[in-house]
Length: 473
Image 1 (cartoon, rainbow, N blue to C red):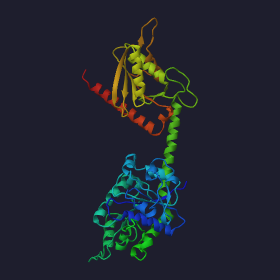
Image 2: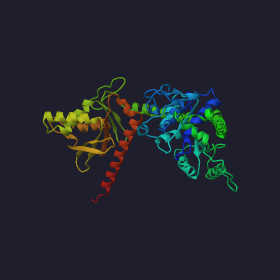
Image 3: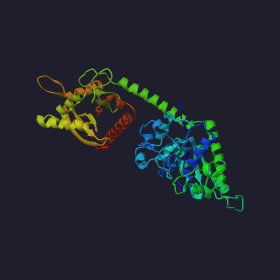
Image 4: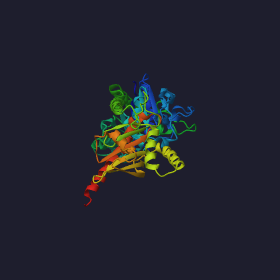
C-alpha cells in the first residue's frame, strides 16, 4: 500500500517561522518535483495554510479532525494553489486532542491511508498530544531555531524521541530568521555559524544552510487582501528564495533515498501485532466450551447468545459463556431471592440487568478448613474494578437437605466450572455481560481491559491471603 513520506515542522518556541517554513517548503518541493504529490496540513489553528492555498474554498465538515474519526483520505484532501493539496485546519483542536489516547494514532492512520508522495505537517509551539503524533509519524523532523532559547527547547523534542524508542537522527535543526547583517569577532562570524556550533555541541544535527531574516518575506503576510503570498511568487529576488530551493533539494533527496521508511515500519509493527492478537484470539476461542456453563445448552454455530456473560477463573484455568437468564436465575434465586417478595425480586432483577452493561461481577468461594462450610460471595464492581456492593451466602457442607440430598446450585456451578477434582480453598470467577457480540470481549482493547480487572482482583486476593497468614493465632 502507498504511504506518504512525512516531514514534521516542530518547535516549542513560537515566532521562529514554523508555518512560513512548512507552507513554503511544500510549494518549493512541488516546484522541484512536479510529479510527486505534496500534501500539507496544520495542527495549529491560525488558518495560515488555508488562507495561502484555498482562500475562498473549504469543504463543509472537512478538516484535520477527520484523520482521527475514520474519514477516507480522499474526502479530506482539497486541491490548493501551486499544486499543493491540503487538509483544512480545525477550530476544535482541543476537542480533537482530548480523543487521542497515545502518540501512535496518526502514524497508524497514515500507514493505511493510501496517501502518496510527501506530507508536511505544521505543528503548534507546544509538545501536546497532536505534536507528539506528528513527531511519531515523521521520517524527517525539521526544527527551526533562531536563538539560544529556541535551541534549548529542542531538548524536549530529543527526549520525546528517546522515550519512545525513536532514532534522534530523524531530527534536523535549521537556523531561521537569521540576521545576516550581524557580525561577530572570533571563531563564529555570524549568528548562523554560532547557532550551528551550539547545536552540534549539544549533539544535534543540522540541515545544510539557513533561512535568513527578510523584510520582503515578512511583508508577504501583511496586505489589505488578507492573503499570505508564497516566497516563490513574490520573493524571487531575495536570498530566502535561493535558501528555500536548497532546503527543498535536501528534503527531496532524502525522500528519494529513504521513502516512507517510518510509516512502513509502523505498518509492519501493526501487522505483527495484529497477527499475534489473532493467534491469541483463536487460542482463547478454542478454550471456550461450545455450551452454556450452567444449563449445558448448545451455543449457536457462529457466536454465543446476545447478552451472554463471559466468565473466567482468576487463575486463568477455565473460561466460557453463560446464557443471560441462566446466570440471572442462579444469582437471584440463591443470593437475593430467599426472603423477598416476587415483586421486589423482579424489581431488583431489572435493576441488575440495567447496571450489568457497565459493571463487572465476581463470584468467590472460600472454604473453611475447620468446618464443612463454604462462604460464597457475589460482588459488583465498577469499570475500574472497584467493589460497589456484595452479598454473601453460606452453604453447609456444599449441600442442602430436603427429601433428597443434593448439591447446592451455587456449589454445583463451581464444581461444573472448575471440575469437581479441583478442590482449592479459594476459587474465584470474574464475569461480564457482553452485549450483542459476545466474542468481542476476547479481542483487542476489550480483552486488555478485562485482563487489567483480572489482575487487580488477583493482587487484592494475594494481599488478603498475606494478611490472613500474618494474623496472630
